[in-house]
Image (cartoon, rainbow, N blue to C red; front, side):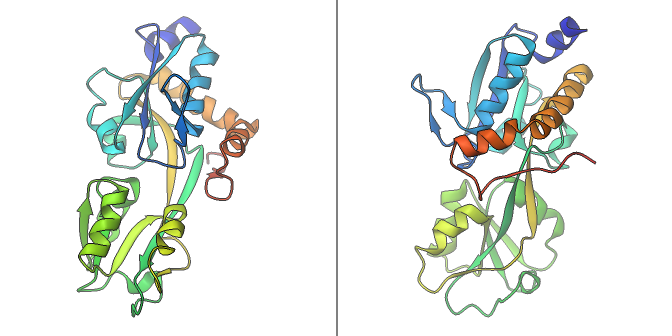
Length: 243
């Protein structure tokens, strides 16, 4: 059975792990050899260790790029947020970690709560094809979504164009609000980005192995240990057990 799992999970004899470099909580630096370092690379390396093969990181600039290449046979596991649109081409585990997504508003904004955001005339800056952008695309009915390529670019779009709202991950917004006198982060969250591991569709044994691995990694304390080791406690949380 282990041979069958390896044949699906690492068919080249190496586990090719696509890593989203734009998530600053999951990729917090570089290893001495230049490979990405952080919770996400650690999770990928642990998968490889458990099946007894080397890991090769495949750095990607954005989660959308990982989803776009799911059928191109350039990666075997992809570490990105689980979203219904992405699940059309990727089989995901349950989340191993969660990050709150919420809004920042500028000084003097009449927007006081999450419920005030989805109104006619409200313009929201967001990082294109991020997990929270996909959530907003499904759920925002009256406000306008304005997209930029990447988190930094979404901040610039918000500031330079005087937009009404900046959508983002709470840990990043905590940094952004310090740069904008009078700006506020709204209480609560509109979504929690579910950080998961996925495999391309058509690899059922690999998908089942990854689902089991993630639940074990949470229950055993491995995910929590990695979060602590990389100094992102309080900003990244261990996800609850599946189901």
